Structures are given as C-alpha cells and as structure tokens.
Image (cartoon, rainbow, N blue to C red; front, top):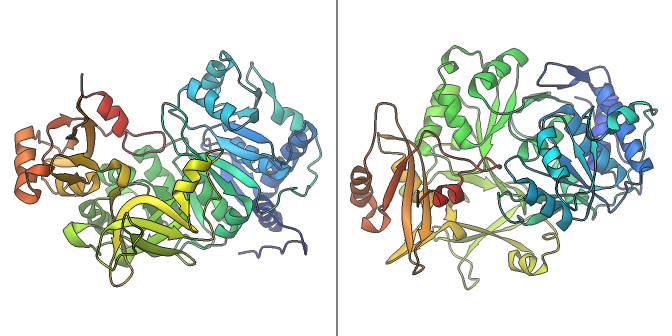
Length: 514
C-alpha cells in the first residue's frame, strides 16, 4: 500500500487532499468501478475532481458556501462531493425518501447556494424546479433542464488546487433523516473527519476493495473515503438487492461491505447465498439498528468470521466495535454487546441526575471523543442539550459490564411509557425474534387521545407461519409480563424502512387507523 504524503508544514491538509495524494501515487490502478461496469483509474478520478473543483471555484463556490447534492451511488456523486469540499464549500446530501418540499426547506435552512444533481435523481430535480426558493441547479451530465457542469469542467486543465479550508470549517452538515419537517443538521468539521480517516478497519483487505450498495449520502460514503485513503478501490451499486450484491462480491472479488442488520438478514435468506463464492470477503461491517443475536449467530455459521458490529452516531462518529470473536457475547436478557470503546473514545453511563453508574446499571450512554460534532446547524438550544461538559449525550439507554463491553437497551425517545412502567422496543424485538413464527419485527408506540401510550408490533412471518395477536401476546406475557404484550399485531411482507435504512416506526404508526 502506498504511503500518504505529508502535508506542507504549517498548512492544514483536508481529507480530500489526502485522498487525491493517494490517488496520485498510483494513477494507473483501478479506483472506482461503477454500477454499469465502467472502471475509473485513480489518476482519472483525481483529474475529474480537480477539473470540477476548478470549475466550481471559478463560478464563485468557496469557503463558507453550502453545496447540496441530489445524487445516487455514482462516480459523478463522489467527484462532486470531493470537488465541492476541495473548493472550500460545505456539503449537504438530500436523501432518497425525502419529499421535495422537505428538501427545499432543508436547502433554505443551510443557506444553500448551489444544487448539483446526477442522472439517478433527475425526476426529483424536476419536481424541485417547480417549487419556490430552490437554489441554482447544475446537472452532473446532460439533463435537458439544467446546465451540464461536468461538460464545462471537462474543457478545463486538471490543475491541482489547495483547499482553503481549516480544521474548524464544516465539511458537511449531515441530516438525521425523516420524511416530514426539517431533520436536525449535524455539523462535521474537516479536522475531526480528517483524523477519523486514519483508522484502519481490521480485515477490510490489503488493499481493501469496498462494495457500496447502500446510500453514499450515509455511512457508505465514509467507508469509501477510508478505502481510498488506504490505497483501496470501490465498487458501486445503485442499491441493495441481495442477488446483485452476492453476484457482485463474487465477480469483483470484494473484501469489505457495510450493511444494516435488516439487509444482512435478506442476504442470509436469499437462495443464491449457498452457491456464491464469497472467499474474497473478509469483513462485513454492520450497525445502525439493533441486531438479532439469533440472526447474527446464523450469519457467523454461514459466512464465517467476517462480522464486525459498529456502534456510532453522526454526533460522535465511531464509538465502539465488536469483532468476530465477540458476536456471541450477550448480557442480561440476551442483549448483544456492541463492543468496547474505539481508540480515543471514552464511555460512561449516567442516570437522569448526572450520576455515573457502576457496571451493570442502566442509564444514558455518554461519549467523549476527538471526533464529536461541534454542534447542530443553527440550533444552539439543542446543541446545549446534547453537548454538555465535553460529553455527547447520545439518547441511548445502555450499560457497561465489568470488562468494558457496552450493551444498548434502547433509545430514550423511543421508550414507550405505558401504564405501570417502561417498554423498550429493542428489548421486546429481541424477545419476539425468538418466536418460531417471527422472521423480522418492529415494536412501536402510539398515544391515544388522553396521551396514554400503547404498544404495537409489526411482524414479517417466518415461512409457513401466520402468528395471531393472541399467540404473540401469550408468548410475551409468559416471558416478560403483561406490561410488554403488544395491543395490536400487523403482519407485513417486509418491514418499511426510512431513507436511512432504519425501521420506519412513524409510517407504521400512521397506518394504525387504517
């Protein structure tokens, strides 16, 4: 693997410049393979970034500006992000699943001056054009409704440029997802992000070859940056389809990929799995939602020692990791550990009064790390609530054991306060996944007209089963008590997911009256 060149003495080197330096060290090697099978060399990727950064800078994009991306999993999206950051702008990504009016409100809230669109999102872009207040738009390719900025950039020389950013400048504002309203914007600075990319993921490959089959606007984009910084290459797919993912791993000799647990389960359940050559795959990183111990044991038996669980938040980035040997470490009630603190990360558990709790006692998970956010975008009250005394208050309920392993019970705000006590959805989901008729499930709460909360379950039945509400209630009551028994049961073909790939409890809640 090539060594990263040192930054010029006294000048901050942004993460984009580090990526470009690594690409320059071996310009002929393959860096990106697109979903259409086009292979882009390291030198060509570097040149595209330099050309577009120069074009954007000439059009007035610079330090302190906000550029928004409405893009899919394309090489053009990657080039656009790097180019905008290199020119000095902060980047905001618009997630698939957001409504156009929500996108417009997000762009207005972050003072967006330019919107870049690739061919995966042209239909949405045309909807945005019909709304008031949308910023100037450029397309990353021929579109018919906006100027093709890549065509203009292609006429420029690929001249290197130094980024004007400093370590305290924002490289992006990452929104937390959601389909209505304006999700909170999490500021991420160049300095903390640049430091985080020095981390080498165990068993990711040497050099790594990363498969991006989830949205680049989410964590897949971070894994791409880590991969390219380490002299690796990236394989892009437009989305997650189990058959396509399996075929791509075999064909492209992928070493590493990132999946949310529901996607991992779909991979395990696909009939092509048994006949696919996965010998190149040395690491599957997973996280983002609670994982089922039973399904992870199945994954370990089927896939081998390749599973690495990650726990993190955009507010604090990378918090813990659990490796293949730790996938069966469980705590009380069968809770699966999310691992121990990553290097440089401190974790404490505190109660509502701020008292640090001893091992085994549940409370809120607090994190102190050099990679934490400086705050939310233009929300000082919320920032003061989450960042206190140098700690990130994660909003997660959990506990540490004597060996420093962290166990998550639930989100404080997803806790369902029922008459007689508290129901933690993740805890109840783990229990239900042990029922032979349940393949997947989500627990969610709702309030009635008197603000009393009630527990509901959505279940994907196991093949050949159709569980009844009474069956599920009896199963839960016998093991956890009547307090936890759901009042309704909805059988679904699949669990609906948000744009971030997490169970969409809000959508399920909206269906209760139907």
